[in-house]
Amino acid sequence: MKKKGQEEMIGFALIIVLVAVILLIFLGFYLRGGQKESVESYEVNSFIQAFLQYTTDCKDHLEFLSIQKTIFSCDSNEECSDGRNPCDVLKSTLSDILEKSWKVEANITPIKGYELIILVDEEKERVSIKEGEKTNNYKGSFQDFSRSGKDYEIYFNVYY
Amino acid sequence: MVMKKGQLKIQQMAFMLMAVTLFFVLVAMIVLVLRFSGLKESATLIEEENALLLVAKLANSPEFSCGGSFGTTRINCVDADKVIMLKERIDKYSRFWGVGSIEIRKIFPDGGDVLCDKINYDKCGVIEVFSKDVNLLPPASNFIILCKKEISGGDIYDKCELARFLVSSEDKR
Image (cartoon, rainbow over all chains, first blue to last red):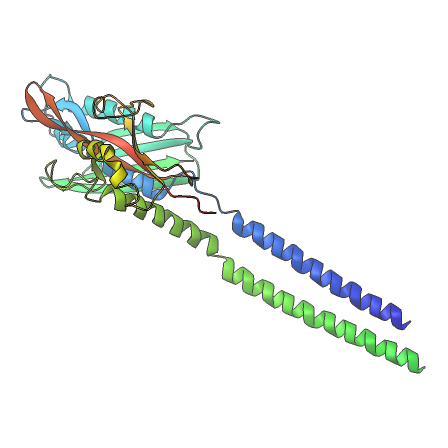
């Protein structure tokens, strides 16, 4: 009878140890499960800063314009030295940059889509480029600047 | 009778032990859940911040950055002319940054996988600054602007392209 009591106590202790081990394993898996995100927010932000400085093939009377200067040129209805419309250059260059930087390919990249909008004075939509689908998971960034009293806003979201 | 009383006491003690242990396990679980609830988020944030800082630190270091060579001072701007010359003398610098490899990959215009050197660096895709012959961790990367001086119609102008700056640390495990 005494032996039975001891056996029960040992059994109980074993159960406690087993539960503790299971808890530890679970905790270990939980903490190790942290994976790198497919899109980092700093990448989206740096992307805007970088593409604004990209040199396009639209030239004014002085130099080849950066994307940022092409936005101003487009908004002022100017022309490139070869007669092209800066707004067309802006849209086609940005589309190409986005296509190369954020590849939307099902089953190959985790990116499902993206959206880039350039607004002037909060209402005039100068550029709007959308690709792929919008999902609930996304990283986005925003950049604004002003010139000659006008406000320019760039919104960029990447969906994954 | 004496035997039965003893058994009852042992049983009581066992139940008491069980209750006390369960109580402590529950308290420990609650404490752990509260303690670790934000751990993953903070770990991700710190990892993200470290990667960004490392890439930003290198891209904006005097050996890589554009400085004032392209008009105003630019952030995350790498001088391609400087990097190509640095690559030529990399044996003096390979231990300078304390990382396993540094690579710059052009995104737009896309130069493919063609490795850049002093002769072809306007028509290539990858500037492999250096790579140690060790196990490397997956690279941290960020978008940069890669600028150089070009000639068009006899005029020198600044040409800036979109690229990724990739830095891998040594895997010391």
